[in-house]
Image (cartoon, rainbow, N blue to C red; front, side, top):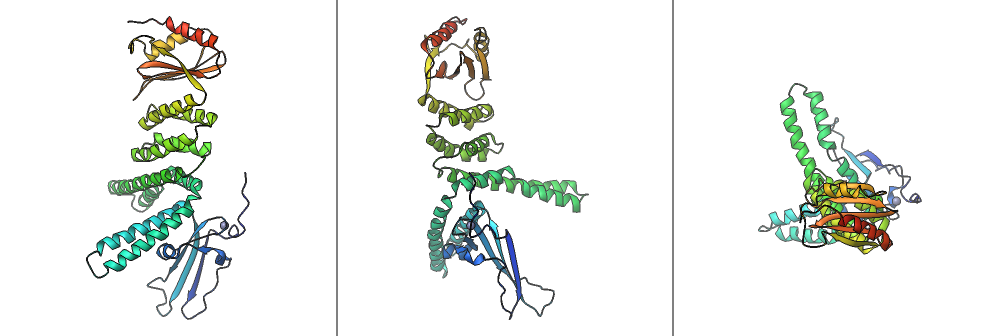
Length: 371
Ligand SMILES: [Zn+2]
């Protein structure tokens, strides 16, 4: 589905700047930026944000007067308008609210206290209207977050290049400085993941590719990133319970991650249950008697399954943090087993005929058991 280009702002450049001297007429921007709308006035004053009334694209307006001009007798004004991502807009608004709150706290006891508190309350109310507007672009913001997370070390990498070029001799000091920047990059990434989670929950029906990309964050090396998306994913996957094919793909992705990621292992179990509710049935538990039989390890089971002619192993995940899993195919049906409840639980496509299930059960009953 291709979207029609926006009639208001698709012709505008990503960035435009004007410059004029004091006591001269202010020139117009070359393009019709005037059709862009002001955001909530309080937010506009605090952040410089405006937006396109048709497509919701955000822009940042800035004005400045540089000090120490080349010709001291001349005062120049500068103005710029630049397109910014919805994520940047969100961060700008949230940053302004946080700053206003800090000012209110700092001045609590003095003469400015009342004014600062009022300013904060006003900005917070306006920001909540602006956040509602941003929610309509939740999918876009989640994508922005994913892009930012993929490129999270851009800052410290540029910093490293600069240092290496200008101070090639001071390797140790450079490294120290780079690590400091890296830490800041990491903190920003954790914040981005938190925003991602908040907007993910607002998407009514998340498209599969987006879901898969977010799922991959569960295997992220930065633990606070993986933790930040866990709960929103849980909520989101629940909304996908009728999308069986998509859930299967999500399950496959989780299986790839779950050895290295506890959140992925947990979600994997959850998605398995979702799948059970939508056309997968449990048909057997092993051992049939008693609570468990420690001699039935995944290796023993794997060897035994492979003895049944025509059975094809699709996937085997040895026990990591949690249970082991074996997926296989037999007579055109997909089976899956794992020992999540100490026993091996066996699942199969709901429409698999009983005769085939009996074949599998009879074969499993012949497994060498210790008890
Ligand atoms: Zn537009």
